[in-house]
Amino acid sequence: MTSLTQRQGGVVKRRSAKEGAEGGTFPSEETELPREDLDDEDRDSKEARLTLMEEILLLGLKDREGYTSFWNDCISSGLRGCILIELALKGRVEVEKAGMRRRSLLNRKVLCKNQAPCGDILLDEALKHIKETDPPETVQAWIEYLSGETWNPLKLKYQLRNVRERLAKNLVEKGVCTTEKQNFLLFDMTTHPLVDSVIKSKLIKRVQDSVLSQWTNDAHRMNKRMLSLIYLAHASDVLENAFAPLSDDDYDLAMKRVRELLDLDFDTESMKEGTNEMMWAVIAAFSK
Image (cartoon, rainbow, N blue to C red):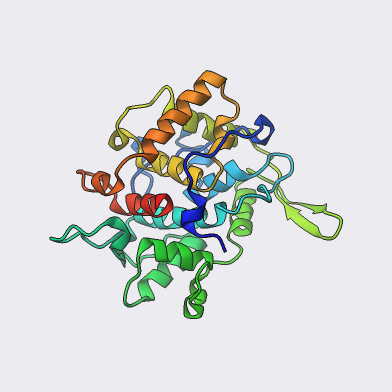
């Protein structure tokens, strides 16, 4: 079992550009994807319907092979973090108020704010667990429970199973990937090669632009969804795939700005006006 603290040792090192891919998607920061936050050319495009979880998986999937790196042991918990942020952006969950003592993000509990289903099986399954849990648990605890990475046998019932496969099937249904069978000597494995490179190339372009041409030097001026994507792509060890195609100078600049984001005081950021405390709580859990 790998803990969250073992996974985050700073910015991941650059790997071979062959592991990179071309990409595309960029929903908005609000709870139900407000139309005004999408570019005109993207309003009706299918990439606007991808969830944060699907975007992270898409960044991690090798285009031709159709599977994530066998050495990536971070993406599983990263996807659970995506689920918590997605629920928060949709107005379904929140972290409890800091109170007079100003408790840190990691000590505050996750509360159900709205029980209405989201229409996504994974999100609704996680929401059901959170709603029925009393007393409530912290963000870090929920990431561990939903991943099945807990020593408490009573909490194993909260584990979301086959998350990557279920998300990959969603990408197949949305026409982004296809399904194939590959033989790996001792076993057969279902893979999901990319079939719509435009979707993924747009995703990668948006991630690159967010830390290059559209960099604001202020995390609170960035789109919440894109900010979450950058943090969780880093936590899932797939951010490198978006930066690999860059020139050396742009790559260095992009990584410098990612380090600036990682060095922020997340408790302080969560107290600023108009912020989403759940987003910062999840980010803090992966940076602990």
